[in-house]
Length: 311
Image 1 (cartoon, one colour):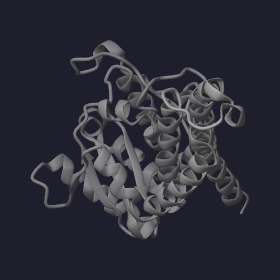
Image 2 (cartoon, one colour):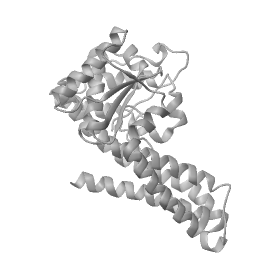
Image 3 (tube, one colour):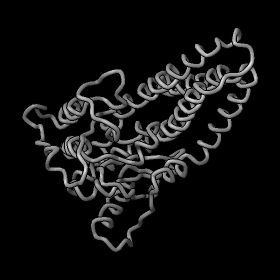
Image 4 (tube, helix red, strand yellow):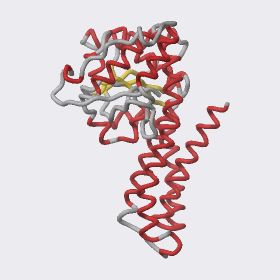
């Protein structure tokens, strides 16, 4: 109950930021328009959250009849784990991106989807892929996906409206702080929106790691996958995520940049903290159980960078 209340307060804060940015741009009229837009965005996100994000990433649905064995195994494992967890089988999607990563979306378990980048299937072994997808199924089962997608939609709108405040202001400057106020909202609103995203993301990622380990029955596989994804993702840009940074908190590992510690501006907790917690579930010493991650220079890609965190 406390978690649902906290989520409601965080979403209300995002809506308030959007309305406040509307006021800074257009005064009472702008505030009213922003409020109506916020209501529309919440409604549209509720009914179409999965379609919105999947379209952003050009995701393609796959099924057990796919010609490639690795994809057939991937779909079969998602179906098997969902059945074992006693939840509806979600739609399964693939995204044409070399960065290994994954996310879940949808308004509830009956209308959910899980998506993985092609890089995930190519760079991780089957056991590790199962661990990752069990984590995403945990998000679906815990009903995190609706909150995460609505947050991404509104946070992106707040940032866009705040940036617009740099170039437009109307009415009486004394009522809205003039250009100084517009500059302030353009700087502070995206930061505040990002902070709300982080507050939602971190707690839910830790919970999904734990529940995902229970669904797969293999916390060590998820720990290994997190370390590999972090190392590889730092060397492989996720172009779609760079174009839609407000969705970064939805991924199992931050697709934008890697952070070595749980700091204020990281959408995910540090990977080593996530690994330690998972290995505690395994009942082993986290230090002795650490999996050797691939070096960034070994990443099979034409680009070069790293990524990582835990939620």
